[in-house]
Image (tube, rainbow, N blue to C red; front, side, top):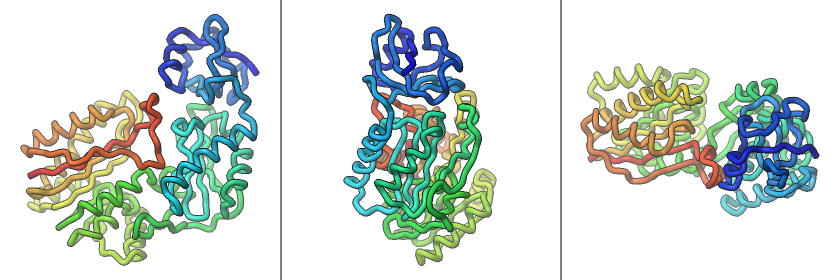
Length: 387
């Protein structure tokens, strides 16, 4: 096994518990003398071992730690890690048919995502280390879970930063699609090859159900995608309107509502434009869900993202009836929890609304957060009431 030495700053980062070492903290950058995706021994400037990591030639995240000791990431290693991650979900959600089974660094398996949708699995291997071990991982998933099929969704643009091609397809078994799965008492349909991320937004699964518990009166779901929030809002609201710009997603919302037997008014429109028009009409809603896409995918995008988040929260608060509840989210890691609350506070001030925080939310328990890696806490949410 090759060795990579790191700076004192890199060692301090490891000792603080973070699993990433950046290229600027390598001593004597090995470049491509070590194959991208190889497992390497990590050592300090005096050669003292610090653990084992996956090495990437191209990414600014040069090392991703897999152990704090020297290990060989062989079949037994991966089987043990996968079995541990799966066992956690079985403990938390016995019998669940749609959830995340492996959540990358948070499950001590950097560069690997595995989601279950019914009898099928959808996986992502976004770094060279897991890409080159993809067949081994698929073998082990078949052994442990016996899925009808395994789909790979390796079409994320982040792969280009690792020198990997974008691709998607069927790795094992078969996939006829679309796939149906349940969230509480609602039935959703997802196309694992064409849907967002690995197919759907499983990180919001528990929050979807929570939204239904808050729902009353006229309800509004903004950036609705496949209607996960809208269908749950229909449990308690008198009426539900879902606004989504994608025509394909709007059609999916309609099918999901019909399949579940719930009435949802679907509006296919740009949310920003629709909000301005709706406000000018004098409309008010008792329950609003605001779940936009990630506006800040890099640090350079933070100023524009801040403006976007403020505008949609301002408009939502202006639409909210007295005593109404707003569930608002950001999935941008670069907008931290304090930043997000500051943006919403600014929006409330401009909307001239007093706001109570009822709950602070995050991704579901099947998307655990590694305490020493804030990057794994990307989804933030607030449940707000405006008297």
